[in-house]
Image (cartoon, rainbow, N blue to C red; front, side):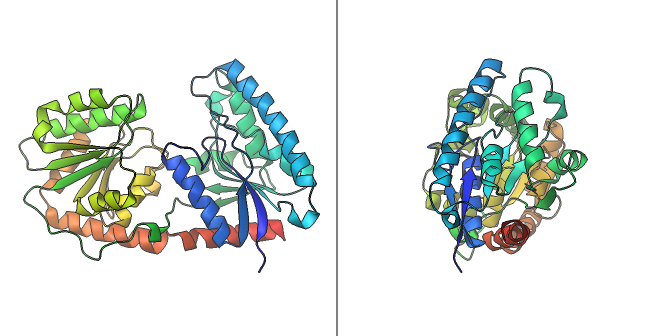
Length: 371
């Protein structure tokens, strides 16, 4: 079967971006899944529309640049024979801080379907500093023939505003489990339970999560545990201070690029801990479960779409230090339960969240649009 060309775009962060993140990982995985589904995705543009601060002028500048890019792409795609043109435009991650002003225009000009994965609506942003970005995101979401919904958290607003012609298809976050091969056996449990967290060190939500984690662990100094922290960034010194009273128990590994080294830490850990402040869902939570490690996380956003509470880990009320500490205390004192959660986590990812399942969902949803 000949693969059909697809124009792929990620306005928040390109799959070629130099800095690792969950967004970059998922963009790359979606391209792999489209390829597995029988398409031939190629990156249409590196244009990034992210506005973090709510700067109206920046949003307008990005819109104008996007319109020029759309015009360039229309001319580019019209040049070759029709059979070599994209049969679909596919955009990953559209929301008010990173709207897609390009895809809808190119799709309209070429007469091809337009699809989005991970689109979210935020009616409260219709007014205020991100009003223009909100307008662009809403227009793209309205134009989409299909939206792949990655978390239950996003579905409500998408359902409420869904145009009659639009299909909403569940596509929960997934991994290519072959990129995370297990050794076959987890290391034997030591005297001290090994905790692990993997997260960038930056202002805002990440720092807030580290603060909750440090505060929770401070309450559990009477219990045995050690913590490995993987990550780096501009707030590293401040984060080190948060854990300074527990310095003998905490190991900072910095940023780890080697997947083999990260896999070794996932497999050695008894529990992955992350308060997950305002996480969309958290790719690391899937990665650690793929290696058989249970998760304790805050129940923000779409985290419940990647961690099954009580089955593959535990979720605590968002931002609640006491609840996080209490849940962690219970797990630290019940190693048998930790083992059971970890085994369930491995089965969950390997049997339900692998690349082949995602590719099948994509193929079943896109074939009617592209044939």
